[in-house]
Image (cartoon, rainbow, N blue to C red; front, side, top):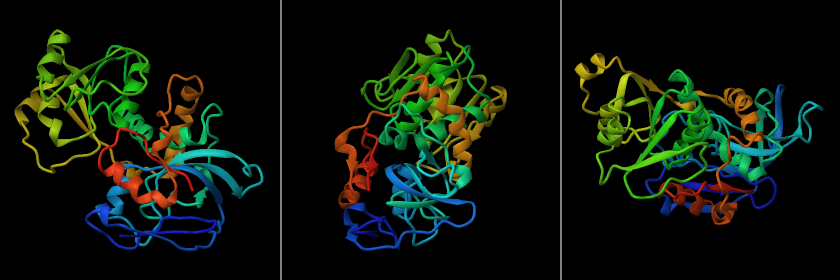
Length: 334
């Protein structure tokens, strides 16, 4: 994999081939031209950009729909520099499934964006905080929406509760007043902001499904948001209430044991969410719904650790830290 960074403005990460190991990525600095927006587009100066697991998977060649070469990066916060006069100077945020996959993305000094995807960021968020929201909150919102929405009477189980999507789901579910449980494979305490109590299970030492059933008087979880997939599949299925919905956004194994009898007797529903199918315009519409909650501080951005904010010279370190499962929200700052 050959990342190419511009030595002078604009700066960009550009990928032209695949590699099995980020530790062997070659980082170089090269000069690129400023992209020019076409009709219906704007030129954005990127101030901060999130680094997501999907960005890393794309870098490793695990996104078959990716177009090469390209600049990666799905999430961003920046300033509109060219476009309709009403947008010039606007501080914006966003994220999109096409960015960094089928068209150049946000890991660059400059990015061309559909003007329909332009949304002013919440004024109470820094650029880094705004750039951190993107994919995690878009995924969480869309998954809960597709599952029918969260009600105050619901029991919600979040598998992988300390991941960034898991943390976003917990914020949204507790904001709705639901009773929320989370599970991890370790004793790590719950990370991130919540709007109410959350009980944590360690599936490495506890029978999480049995405990949840016990604590809910045998009812179980009305919504299971499974952010990890196959490793939690059996636990999640045992924890589901009658007519429960399980949301999937990722997996390790593609094939899992499936009990059809329990599925139809439980009247369960499985919901698949692929945010690569949600464009930056779709993401902007979701942010329209989330922005007031951020402004009211009912939703909070991920804490920004200065040690997890990287310049392009350390881009390989940024990608490698995400690959290795850091608990920090990793950002690039051109």
